Length: 362
Image 1 (cartoon, rainbow, N blue to C red):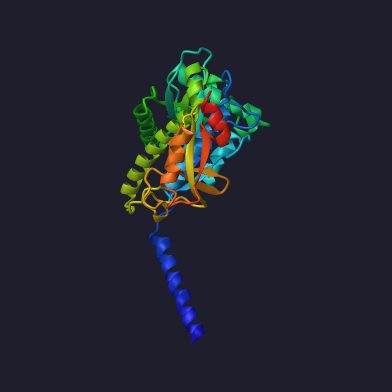
Image 2: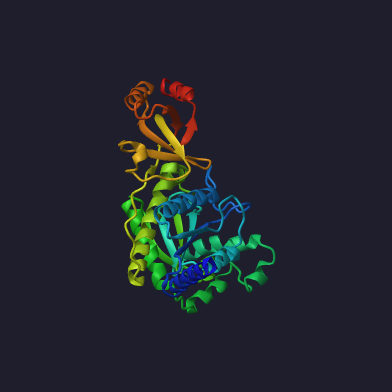
């Protein structure tokens, strides 16, 4: 009898799985590509390297997607300072059957006056400036061994090599343009100057079999933009803009695919401290997961944020540049959180309370 019950149970589960396989949706997959890396620094400013900016924004973007869309699979072409070939980046997108591919870059020119964001889709470069951007980004293949064989004789520095893009019929162009337009619109909402959506012959987009965009976050050759791109505020703002564009694109994709989602409970936000600010906060507790805003663990406290340290999400309450003021807040919640204690940050870098007191008394 036990054997028969187990057999019926297995048969039932198998039937459910079969139905899911027939009627279920493939998990939506986004591949995030931080341009350059390793011995390929990309564009170099007066003190910043492009590869580091790209990676910081990609990590922040991936974190936003993962936190708010658990149904989405996020794949990174790189998560550390390593060199990845253009072909390998595209292979990662194709092997994971990506639904969209977003490649993040930082621009540069010989002069220092150019500024603003721009997002590219695959196509023929119709202006000299677009061609120059594509040549610069494609030139990374010259760092690879035997690149002429690997890329079928493509020479990133020869205008003749780009003629191929004139005759291409990109089946993903419409969706790529949709995503690119959403991204630039969100940059505008963040008060960033948008240079618009453009087309150019980028190998990494050509090799990726899905809607693909290449985003230029700004010009590292421009001192003001380099400063903005070097701050957590700037990087978070740009990542948030791209994330909101992704979210709109995904909503439209789900609507057209007939996918209906129940609204997700709003989760606690990650803390953000301006780069030069020194502030005190109260740490409530630490967990290995993110909680929702109305979670009972917060005992009615509002405006709780978290920071990540190792494998833990550490939840904080209150913020002040005055130690006396934060101590007063700690005492007010001591009956609910007797183990809470004061910590300090300079920007998003944790420092000792003593260092913070000294910095704020200068």
